[in-house]
Length: 238
Image (spheres, rainbow, N blue to C red):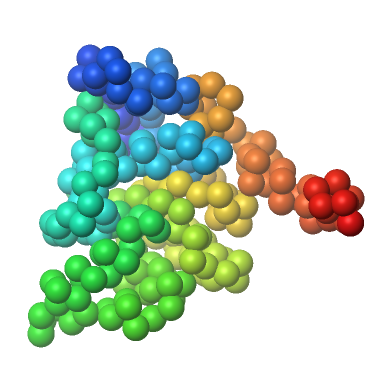
């Protein structure tokens, strides 16, 4: 039984313009439906493969602000999201989400600024600008991630050291075990190691599942660690 908060999405391609760049994203070509049956789903693939484009569309279709934040955030610094969200239909489960957050590494500065503007005596600011980038990301994980919520994270490892990625891994795992759902775009071989997650690759044809060991993040990291000197010699001739 699928008891996820977001169970599937369907794409109505008739709502996408014929000359739209979205039709040229190989990973999405011919994809009309995607099922989400795991509490943690990762989107992996090369830069430009369409991962963030799809996650952003899911976020907007679900009701999040395109630049990130909770559903209560309503602002626009630069309107850059695609029209894909207009063609998406999300099928939700019987459970009602208890909170949620959309984290985008590339627009987090804008969200942090807006968070200060939204603050009031009853809802004091977390003062993200006074923290390092990594500290801010962890502050969000600790204050915003909770059981039963929907969380869309776009490259959450961007500001985190390997050790802090392990901290985030634990936060995600514990929340997922208590009914939260995560859709995560990542290149981190650490986060991808969370047991029981579904990994969807956007490389080599339409989106499809793959194992942890099949991801480039794992294979390249493993190869570099085990053959560092040889690889460096080939790359830079030293």
